[in-house]
Image 1 (tube, rainbow, N blue to C red):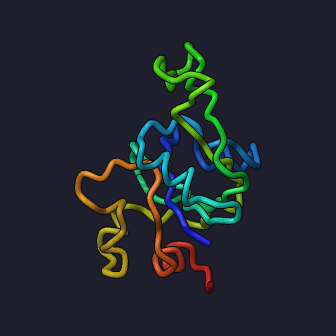
Image 2: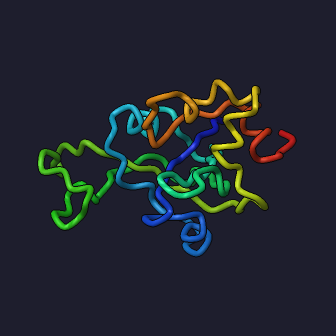
Image 3: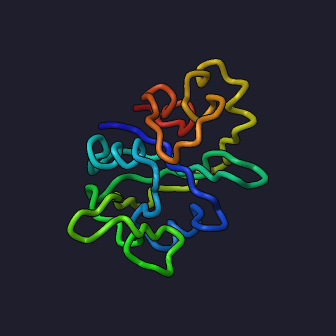
Length: 151
């Protein structure tokens, strides 16, 4: 099993939205490395840290899990979508998405400002200068520290 950090702007889709919906497709990813993570490395059952970005208090707000393998991201074909890609076609789609399911909200958000001061998290990709990937791998130790899970 792999672990992931999934970034979302809470004004677009927040952990409370996933809690309400129970599951949703992780659409709108338009970075090839993040897309390739979904296609080749993310599997049903993998855990995901739900991270709020571009907000007053960025950080991990909840836990989700991958519940369906990568499928075609239909937002790439919708001209009215901000994720529309005129160079993509149904015969040869560029973009994929996995489905995630809500697991739980954290009792207290694990904020980016706090993460920066924890030596055990210094290798997390989210903390690297210039990292803008919306999907990044998370080690088992990082997962346990952030979620409080024993395993």
